[in-house]
Image: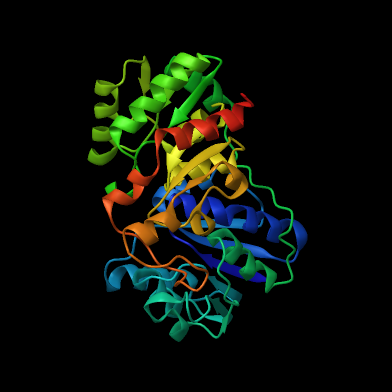
Length: 343
C-alpha cells in the first residue's frame, strides 16, 4: 500500500507525526510512505531512516511553478492513500497535485481553508490533542496507535559534540524562552526570577535555547541582562539536530507553546510547559501533561470575559500579551519541585 503523507510544518507538529509514521511502518509490512515535509522540519526528522520511508522535502509552495513541480514528481506513481495531515491554503493546494484513490483529511470543523473540498474521506472530530488527531489518520488504515515510539534519532557524534562545543556540564536544565509569537512567551523578568531560584536552590547549570531570529535572541539577551546567574546562551547557535541533543541531555525543559517543547517530549526530557494563549490539551507536551502550567481557562474568563466551559470552540485563542502574565513564578516553582521531588 503506497501512502503519501503531507505535513510540511511546524517542527513541533512533525515531531507529533513521526511516532504515527513509525507505527504504520512497524505494523504493516505492505505500507510504504512518502512524506512531503518542509525543509526546516526535514533537517531534524530525516535522522530517522526506514527502507519503506521516503522523505520529499520541499520549500513552502508559493506559486504555480512550485505546485507543478509537486505534480510532476507524483504524476507516474500509483498511490493508494493520501493522508492530508495539514489544513492550510498552501497545503490544501498540494492535494489536487497528487492522484490517490483515497484522500483522507480532517473533519469539517478542523478542515480549514476548505480542505474538505480536496479530500474524499475524513477523520472524526474530537476536542483532542493535535497528536491524537494525527493518530486518527493512521487508525483509518487499521493501525494501533495506543503504544508508540516517540524517539528522534540523534547521531552519537552529535551527542558528544554538543557537550564539548558548548561547554555543558553533566547536570543542566534548559529554558526555551520564546514561542513563535511574542504573545505566547513569558516575560523576561519572570524567566530571570525562576532561573535565579533554580540556580541558587538546585545548583544546576542553566542553558537557554532558541532559534536564530530577532525575537528569540532579544528575549534571551534581556534575560541574561536581568538575571544574576551564570547562563549558557545557545539561542541561534544550534541546528535542529544539535538542539535535540542539547534537550535530550538536559534534566528538564521550561518552555511556552513552541516546537522545542515537542522536541524535548520526543527525546523523553520532562517539559514544564507554559500555556495561556492556547489550551495545553490541544498542543501541550504530550507525555508531560502533569507538568504543564495552564492558565488558559483563567485567560478566557479574565481577558475574554467568557465563562470557561467544554462548550467553547475548540480553536479559541486568547490573543493578548497579558494572558501569559497569569502564570506566576510560584506556579513554575511548584512544577520544578514536583519534578525534582522536593518537599
